[in-house]
Every structure is written in structure tokens, then in C-alpha cells.
Image 1 (cartoon, rainbow, N blue to C red):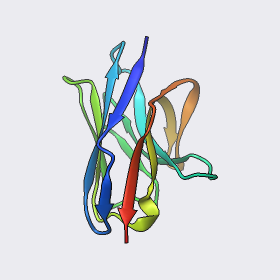
Image 2 (spheres, one colour):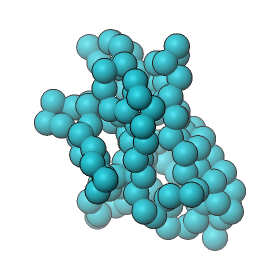
Image 3 (cartoon, rainbow, N blue to C red):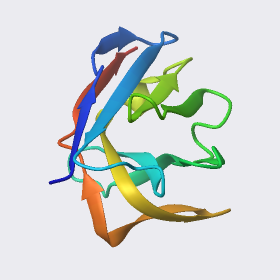
Image 4 (cartoon, rainbow, N blue to C red):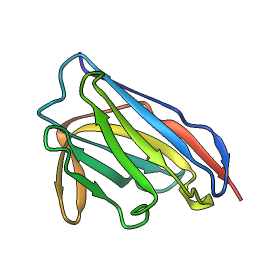
Length: 125
């Protein structure tokens, strides 16, 4: 059974940094595109960043380009999201996901894709 477990969410001041982790288990994700999404209460879940596991090709939402960096460690089957220069508007629950399809316009999770349980990021201004 596939499981994705996020960690690293916290309360941080504006301008600070956080690194989120997503540990994948149950299978190898070397053939997948994986990514991060975020969601605020009452709003739709939105794409943040994606990475093609084997090629290490990355995709970013315009709102985070230049501030966030997505990466993966194949040996650990773990994906990361380094978040710098955090803003109050980055406050959300962050979810990792596997089995995405991506284009220059962003990424979406396939109907057969997987989600983690989410981790809260709160940025105080």
C-alpha cells in the first residue's frame, strides 16, 4: 500500500525558511512525477511545485518561483520542499502527491494518484 507522509510544517516569521519532507513508502516512485500542493480553508487546493523523479525536471507555480525549491533523494525515497523568504500568504496546509501530469502551466494529480495527509505551515507577519 502506497503511503506519503509529510513533515516539517511549523510556525515561522515572515522572511524565514522551512523545509518540508515527504517520505514515500510502499513502492518505488522512480517512475513518477511528484509534487506539492497547498490549501487554505475554504479555498481550492493549488499546485505549488512538481518534480519528475528520474529526470529531476521541476515545475513551479508563479507565486513561489525564486523562493521555493523542490528536490528528491532517490536513496531515501523522499521529496523535499525548501521554502525561503516566506510570506504570510504562504500560510496553508501543504500536501505532497504522487502520479502527477505536468506542463508549462503547472501540474495536476492523476485520478489514480496519491496524497499525503498534509502538514500545516503558518507564517506570521
